Image (tube, rainbow, N blue to C red; front, side):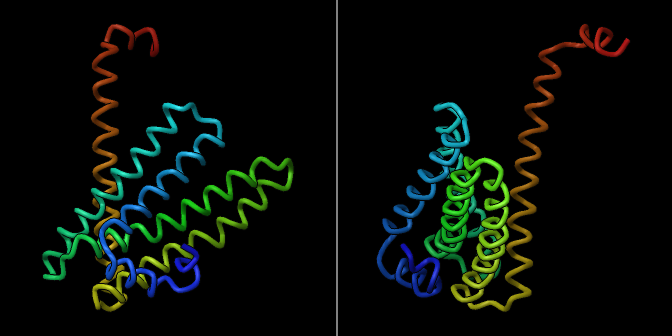
Length: 183
């Protein structure tokens, strides 16, 4: 596991060589780390479970979406797409877990957590770009454009879900309450 931090390209090659089960193991570890992060942060058991399931679904659907995008370039490979997504998520989940524990320290905790953020997030983003370039043999500009397409699509999907839920909430409240809220 420590190879993700020291030699990530070799770890991804090893994951591709071994099996799909190793990718799933990292997916489960990442989801469990996010679950415990949410629990330490003060969320209820049910909300922490939602975080766990949300991480699993997000990575699996993200790998499917990335595979569809790569299909256009005729470089689709689901296991490689999942590995390229799981490596940064694993690193971010470790960073979030450390940040949550550091936030429990009074006064200095948020500062230390901010320092961890400054280290972990650029590392994870750079790692994803590097892995994507190495695994799918693409230049950096194409890699950044493809990842931008993936993340803009994911953001659009999330916003459409949130707006659909908000619309249902407003319609459930009914317009009879609006004159009370806005006299």
